Length: 256
Image 1: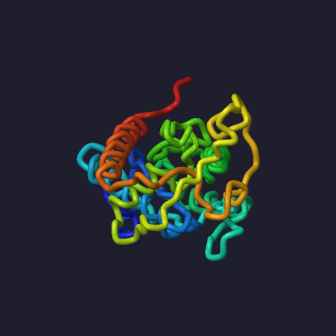
Image 2 (image 1 turned 120 degrees about the horizontal axis):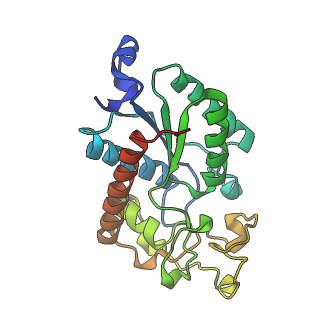
């Protein structure tokens, strides 16, 4: 069996979820994404890609989706009215509380599917803490690894299209075309960092930042060439890659 945990009855959880079950929590965000995108971008992508993964693996993995966590750690965008965010300590407690509930079932594997780059470091901490506290096998996956955490970005964006840029805008244009306003899309790439070998997005030196540090619009990248066709390619590739990762997770365990 596979499905959405919230659709089970209380007694049905005991029958449906066993030691081979994989429980997956999609994690998004409600935060500003520049003038051309709504604040729901990360929440929508997390929810949609999780649904696509469920459809892809439901015949060969016992996968159960939790409701998408839509408010998360978005403090780098908190300067923008309307952004909703949790403090680090609050989010870690929320994740631990959810893990406590998962540990109350027979499931042994908990996966965080993260669609907001600002959560990445904190979710890595949560994976280790939950492993220790609840003896769950914990995993962190992304539709695409954020460029600020070593993932790739386009050459046109100098490898620093990290928020509301070409790829993210294209994916959202594929999922919700009526909610994208390309008339307001402008290039906002921090070209002044491009020659830095280390202190840059994707470089070896991590640094604290807010999206307002890079201009008044709040996005970092170049969405002007975004299109739903590219978005469909990126989304399908992400869903297929995540499906393969979930299949591997389903068979993973530690060996003495």
